[in-house]
Image 1 (cartoon, rainbow, N blue to C red):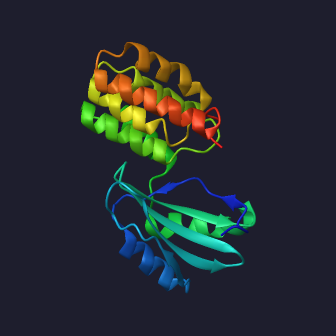
Image 2: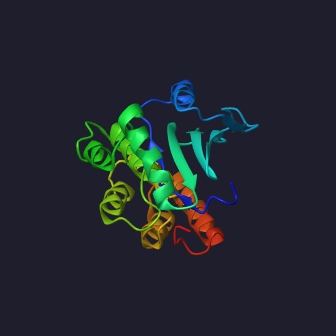
Length: 200
């Protein structure tokens, strides 16, 4: 895996767990199972399985206990080396595409679904700053419903862009809910540990 220099953004699957579905997909293409994480779906620790695609490329499946989403990442030497695999995933596993993820946020019927949709959008967001994603997470961080603000806090950790920092600082200082103020402070500290929230 260390030689795989390029990786895709997280490709969010529609169902979770989806290990059997992905394992069948990999088997149909002759990709052997490579590794399995020791932590198995407990304590919020991501559970990961990977398949060897050859040519130093890897398909990685992750069950994220924190967000309750499952996603795939394809790693390889170059963008061109992984693009055919991404196309196969799109055609055979029908993951969420980014337009759909945005639509779900914009059309959420209630605060809980809004918060869940913001998290799912963030899980599928690119590493580099993406304005449409940022605007929707920002709207969640400033939402009048505390549950939406709380879920949006977690959403902001998946691609920790520096643009979130003023919003997080405001929550840490002024949110009327003590737990949200405290969690915002923890998220800010995590940003600092990562090196300033540049998404690297």
